Length: 231
Image (cartoon, rainbow, N blue to C red; front, side):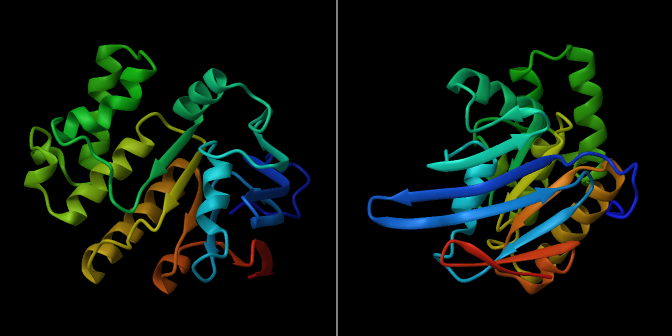
């Protein structure tokens, strides 16, 4: 994690200030502010309904806050139009879901290469990067398999490779081990820690798991839509 005392420390990957979000009469976020540095892993913890997933969705541009600002690099996510936001998410954000969200009719390699195809990367670059990542997550031999032929842990490794293949500056993970047994979950957490250390990508992780929170540099505990504790 970057040293906060160094005068030459890098700029934050993401800055959020005063985020508010309501659904009808229910306020889900009540003024959340945070900064995420390059290479930093941050866990969002708290009870169900505390606003963790809503915050993650706002940080990733899936949902828009009612008030507040979100700065990804030099771009205001809360002001960019729909087309610009979609392009920004393709280029600079990777998302890992609890239930994998792999396309069932595509092979492992085809699922992983999808972000690069959306960015119209060169075919040779796509092939090389997908091969490298599948080797890194231990699935090179299963590149032509369909998701239905994989275990839950293997499917989550495919999802991680897909989230990282376009080399985003920010990776968002929503309960990435919540649908896995303890052994597979431990393997996924080790992989996330190692890859984020190697690539210097920022990771924001929503979790109820103590084991998942333990791989992070910081924990932000939410309650009733506010950060009530940071450790």
